[in-house]
Length: 291
Figure 1 (cartoon, one colour):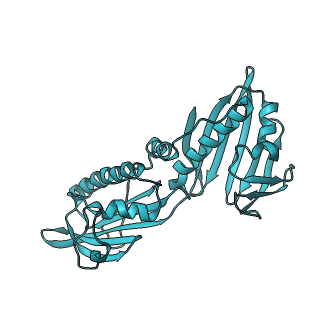
Figure 2 (figure 1 turned 180 degrees about the vertical axis):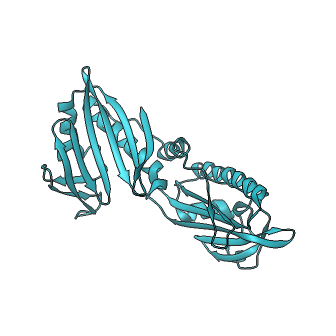
Figure 3 (figure 1 turned 90 degrees about the vertical axis):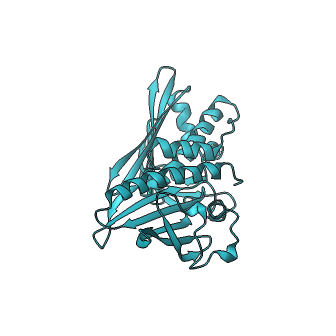
């Protein structure tokens, strides 16, 4: 197994999964291109005109018409099959390897922080493809745990330092979570009564860390937004903002930012390390909560 995440240019990312499959390219090609076989392992029903430039439709369970459209961009049987998938691009390559072959999937997309969701999804799909060819059932996989392993493997848990409009700094963490907004909010707010979450009220412990002294809540819109000023010497020094939005479908997308004044490098470094740990603990807690 060899999975990587790289830059693809134009602000896009490329996820590459490589697997050896114990079947020759011709047999694997049929499972990649024939709708009857795709139905057993691909995440949607596929309708395709199998020619370069041919139209494609992807129909997900419970729907009647295509949720997404695509176009075949490359076709070299039984070696290369590539197509657009909405705004994304998928390229499947089969390379002979002894009595089997090596399958390489390259998924190019714009949402870098969705990479762990895409990787865990394709991991399960390709495992299902191999099981289909082997005449076996796919082994059960804990998708949430697999997702979090990919977050760490791809470096998606790290924060970024940006320059704020006032010349100070902004720490920014973005992370795809494995549970929906309401569940993530519950994990953050803990036993705090929702009626007490108001402007001017204390910040619940789940939304703060000891490295960043918290003032009172300045904005709250449960279960999506909570922000507050952080303090230095009892005075506001910047703003911390938590936001939960729609993610990849695997759960909510968390965006955490903290602004600070120019010259507070030590405080910024301490905050970056503290938020990294804090979000990691949140992610671990969500793994133990029902989906």
